[in-house]
Length: 280
Image 1 (cartoon, rainbow, N blue to C red):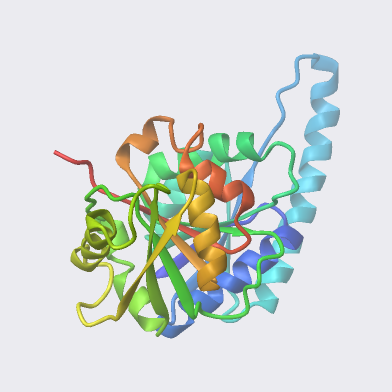
Image 2: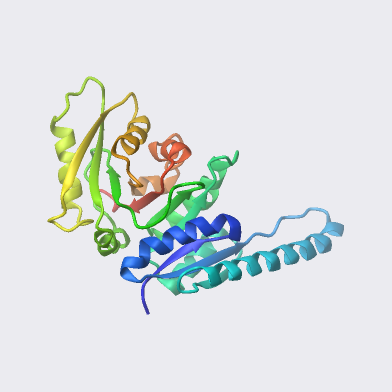
């Protein structure tokens, strides 16, 4: 059985752009696609409303599943549609155990007023539960095929991708994309100083890309890292941004006042989060 990409897909209309992009990413290696629907049942305090709420929920779930099956028939390879009920991280973890995907994917709506809550309550538990790479696709992102210009933004600290991230290396190589390493420097720091060169060396040594892959260094002077990363995406015309998710992020800092949170709020291109191993 070919390896897969698992798409967290609760509504067909919202999931279709993410699923199509995930299918395009996996096409060079013929990766399977699976759509996972996570049932969410509201908690009702009034007993007399429980039956009515359950009936409405069942109708909504039936409509949702019908929509996802229709979406699957429109996608290349007619992906499998999975269903899980209960806590998000438990449902995803069980699907990961069954499917063993190389990559998880979900869409983000930048206009959603509760984006931060979505990230904390859904994305962070997924990372904690699976330690799998996670692709986040903003609504309206130009996703027409495998990426051609990939920006890898690193923070200057040494990192080691975990096993699941390293398993993506053949896929990254199969895209035949141009890779650029972004280093955001303080305005007083001179271009070409040691941190930029070290960032480039860290990516070369990470094992994420074949040793012979050409790498360019893009240095951006900015008042803060998030602003610099977003400007680097624009300057390099990247169509995919790669960020490292360090283990300490799993403890709650990933989407609280972090660079990742700021980037995700404003990034117009898909973002691939790659978990890293803990540092000694």
